[in-house]
Amino acid sequence: MGVPLYFRGKVRDLYELGDCLLIVATDRLSAFDVVLPTPIPDKGRVLTQLSLFWFEKLRDVVPNHVIRSTDFPPELASYREELAGRAMLCRRTQPVPIECVVRGFLSGSGWRDYRATGKVCGIQLPAGLRESDRLPEPIFTPATKATTGHDENISFDQAAARVGGPLAEQLRAISLKLYRRAAAYAEPRGIILADTKFEFGLLDGELVWIDEALTPDSSRFWPADGYQPGRAQPSFDKQYVRDYLERIGWSKQPPAPELPAEVVAATRSRYREAYRQLTGHELT
Image (cartoon, rainbow, N blue to C red; front, top):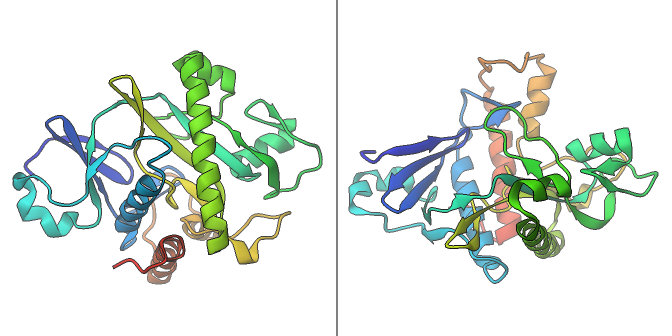
């Protein structure tokens, strides 16, 4: 775009604009840590617009990095249509080197850890819990930030060793407050927030919420009307794609296969439906 590319992730492209970053959410989709060749229309706009929704709604809990999502600098004028709805101009921060995961339900890697040890990230849980059970209280379960492959669950003490005790305490308190507020908002609107991942940065010594906010890519959203503990739950995210790839026996090594039109359409519908239920209006 005539501006320096700072970083290209699986889904987002970051560009340098002086002291700011332009974060562009593409329609790329990754599964099993491989970027698929088939994009999901509207996915990037859902991620950006839902992030903006939550950043604004929860800005009283912690500041966020968003400067604006329209009226970009003149050098980007010719890319106005491509950026519309999927880009944010953001303050640059020093990222905190851990993922701040909060779980309100027992699923995913948390369920696997619990079955093996009775704990999740070193936190002892009651015996006899089933997959997808609601936890007695939400728990903070940090993880490493992996540049390749999967993030690794770590204990709170390990997180504190990486970032310092006072900052780890602050991250835990803010993450739990964000989760509780978001979960209480979402459930009456038909969506259970099973778990989610937050990222934070430091700017002039102040903690800032960065990256994305409570999207289907960073969270497990379950339809509340079909919730049934004791099994895996349907979800408003790319699990539909993962299930398809498992069914066709893909090796989970690149290159990834093209997705058929019906899988693309069903995945797109799930992302849009999560946006509609949470915000109360259709993605336009």
